[in-house]
Length: 171
Image (cartoon, rainbow, N blue to C red; front, side, top):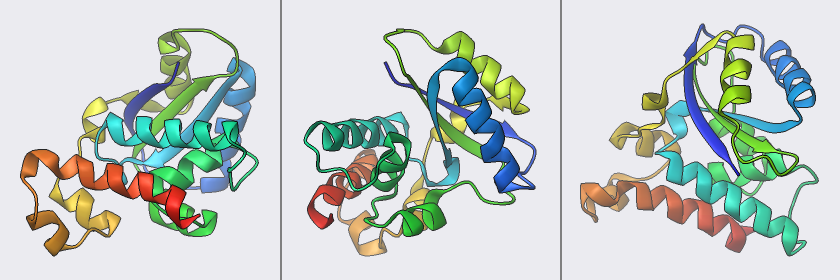
């Protein structure tokens, strides 16, 4: 089962150190962890869709990358190339709001305890409000005014879901 949480913390000063800590915690808790700049997330459904597409790519052997967490990043970004995905939605120096995706490597159902401990270990505090996107999220993601104004505000999240799904086509 996938667990998605939002978190706030101090600005990331050293990205390499941050991801080294994430790697250590991933091994310690036997959990796959992906961290994404929450300013580019439009709700949990955006990330759930990215995870489902990435898993499906592995099942059908159409994955572009050898690591599920990187394949998730591709789909979540709506990009075909990992470098562009990292530049777009990856955690960077100065990032202070992060969306964490936790996927157990075994069949555990609930990752709440481990997820909360990981946040503490990384000096972050859970705040799922950072996952709530707005019109500025769409602009940061590269969606145009024309695209945005063709639909009702209640469907803004669908624009990102469409970008996630389009990765299968542009691969």
